[in-house]
Image 1 (tube, helix red, strand yellow):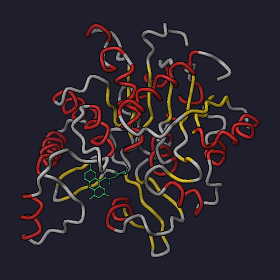
Image 2 (cartoon, helix red, strand yellow):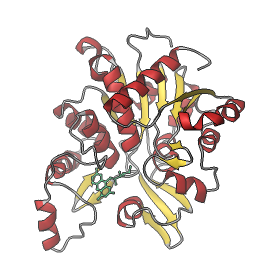
Image 3 (cartoon, helix red, strand yellow):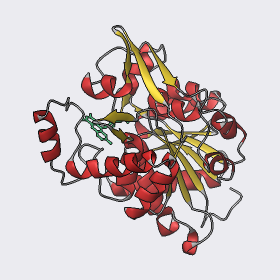
Image 4 (tube, protein in one colour):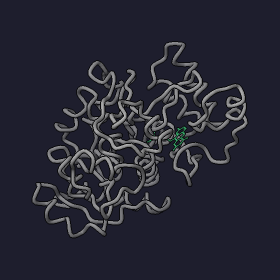
Length: 329
Ligand code: FO1
């Protein structure tokens, strides 16, 4: 890395829970929680987050991946579920149900406050990136949290019963439908949010989180200019496989790889990221795949990638920082 290992700039491309946990690991591993060193200068950690999962509920704009990362960095998230806030109550949702609203998307009372503020600021004309910065600062997050775009992008899922909105697929139908294809409505006209391309270009270490490659990573890369910036950045680029021992750590990544015709393994993930990153980080249980992955041109880091608790996240982040500092990981 070009910068001293004591103050590397890390940019993480992230979706929901896996991205949030690794972001938290970096925030713990980097000085000042990933904030600007000494309170000034560039932020040590920037997290660029998928917005394809965003949705409108009860007239409010909900940004699940941004909130999952934000709450996790602020250490106020519900660790069991991976999303939402700890110590939640659901009085508002119960009342909404009584008033005849569809309440299959679970919104807690405190979480609703986030969506009320976000929606109010968006209605005033502020961009999502500015609103996100305000929310994150109010919660004490020191790292920089960026939506990949301020424009409206919505993931649509093609299933045997037709095209449905992402949260309809994921939450309402418990991601049980076969995924035949994906579309990212609005993405062709979208532009990277301010700071996104610079965060990719100026990073010492660019990390693709162990997030779903199709649902979370692709809608980040597909924002015009982002994939090209990742391909051409001088940063050391590492992806962490979300597939461990042929299974996803969380969510439908394994089923989607299979239904879209890819091998459900860390090797299948490597094929998706060929030419995009330099290092693939795979779990100890997949050590036997290191050879074939090296044959594709990657350096391979084999370690424990299942981030059980905060210590595991920080350890993984430190290993990624160390691997990035040496060529031929
Ligand atoms: N996931 C669920 O499985 N069920 C829910 O009811 C649900 C509500 C929800 C509300 C706010 C939020 O920020 C996230 C929420 N999630 C819920 C998680 C979310 O749907 C997924 O984790 C992501 O979109 C996939 O990364």
